[in-house]
Image (cartoon, rainbow, N blue to C red; front, side, top):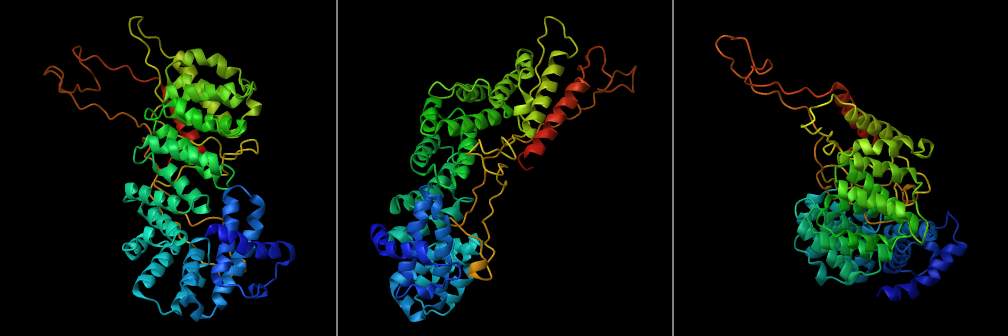
Length: 482
């Protein structure tokens, strides 16, 4: 059916690209049924998902034309099942919620179609509970492949919070019914983000490989990169690092380097020394003989992993050799904090020879994104790499007052999955319970130890201050929400 849309919409798309001015009206496309308009829109969106960025202006134009065609269509035309299905598909493809509500209010529908329409409208309005209830009896597999794929994607999106395993199955249905489309791109991307939550490392790697193979040029690939980096860190120990390298090998050299740098940073701050060292080494070694040994970010994250693993003294020289002028503002602040911690650890009050010095543990500090303002050399880092909200929140759409005033949309509406929980920041140790002193010293407590109870050596104030500095910097860089 999608192949037929290619031929049916080719003439209209050529007409729009060649002759339609910005003020053109949908009525200037004579004799086109609503389902024909929607097929053309889907064709353009599928091109965009595959990486055709030049189709973005055409998509905006088609959304405007399709919106007007829906609003001005005779209600009798929606008695044709193809046009009614097209109305729902348009709604889930970036359509104007006001238009959908207005059209549906004029139609006389069977109960099943009325429930389906209400579920879609609730989804557009950001009402997941209403969507779940309205679509509960709808089986996407019994619908036509085009509509069923969208319904599976929508049902999966609103099921992420309470039924993640069911959501994954629905995303698989969406991919099965609509391969090579924007729906598959969105379903794959959401599956990658959801796999760490259900602890499925095999699915995570498999879906990541499929996404990289087919949709790495999608305008939403930065969201995939976020989910991929988060998933690698969250599934540490559950995924094979050689299999991880197979996925990244399908990226281009710059994308692969940036992904490994982000993994190295997150893993180092989370205290995952082995993963951080692996990622930093992969970022440094480069590809095709082009090593990245002089990349200051790789040097920083490699040094950071050394500090978190307790080898801070050995890392001071390496950290000191980093060219600060080539680091972002955020990473310069992080470098200064790490150097402060490493210096304080190595210069702390000496302990007896037989008592090994305890390294400062920053594993419980909140993780932070790679950069709040990445440069153009980092193609896979989004403009804002702050972690997702701690609780899932369906994306409530703000209805546009007029189709021409609505911002361009390039995907079905998102319902962001709940991120994998991260450890809370380290807090000061609770005071020890009061100890009763001998009768000869009635005022003596645990804060004034007896000879039988040696006092614990207080932590160096400089180390405490360095720890607080790093916590503050990570908050500045976008630490996980409380």
